[in-house]
Length: 349
Ligand SMILES: *Cc1c(COP(=O)(O)O)cnc(C)c1O
Image (cartoon, rainbow, N blue to C red; front, side, top):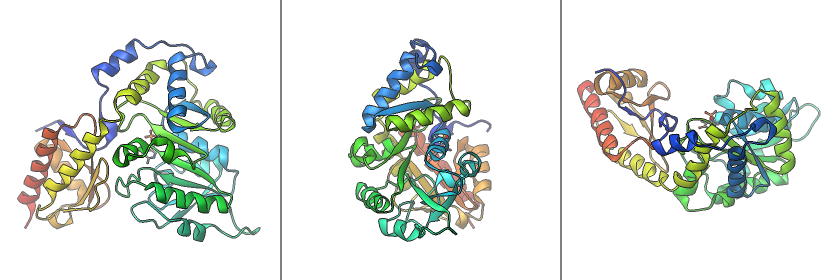
């Protein structure tokens, strides 16, 4: 078999829906770089309102949101504090050091979540010898630590400790809306303690491109200058922003289905010989270990594609990650689970 029929590699793999393509085709546009694209302006206003912040700026990617935030908040030699699994530390090409000249100090959290006490312990005493602790990053939901939600109490606990130490609070909210749907708390409640935060449009929301960064008017003014500097300022970007507007209106509540599908996948894989599913499926990610099958994750991934047309990512040597999204139906989940079980059974000795 060739080709991928069911793609659980990431929630970035969803394709724009027909409605989304229509909204994009019909979008009213202007010059985003000059602040005159009405659709981009609308998307930014909607996001600022949703998150309870003064202003927002549309950017091409979540990575750029993170990197611009660090560049605004930190001076060279400053230190950011984040969980050891954080995307901003591990998966952004060392951008912290490149753009801001910042360093990272990581915390050994539990499923990506750390406490105020752990934060306080990670904050160095200011001495001329040490890097200057400057900002804290909360990844909501935590991606490679399990798709786990930072509970509101944990967010507040960390933010109280951060304020105590005069640290800036930044949220990598790539999947904040998954946390909203999973917990029933509002996006504003989660956003309240943060100086800056952003949403990714190209993950669970199902858009082809884009992310929106929010914060105070002053922060967004500075972020917008970085956007220009980095070459992120666009022109008739309303074409892509229209997808974001539609997604914020119609694709948020439906993520509950993705979460149900992830839970179902976890259940279906539960008693598979050679496979061990990680506990605590809270949102749209399922992690499992294939060591007991005798295959590495990469070999397992390749055979699953070749023999079943199903793609699941290899996360490290034996760990795999399946992510549900807009293009994954309940039937797709059943088929994917059957394929994983089939392959595990055929290789398990
Ligand atoms: C995907 C992701 C990013 C980066 O977003 P891009 O839009 O792919 O640049 C940052 N943080 C987390 C937690 C992510 O999952």
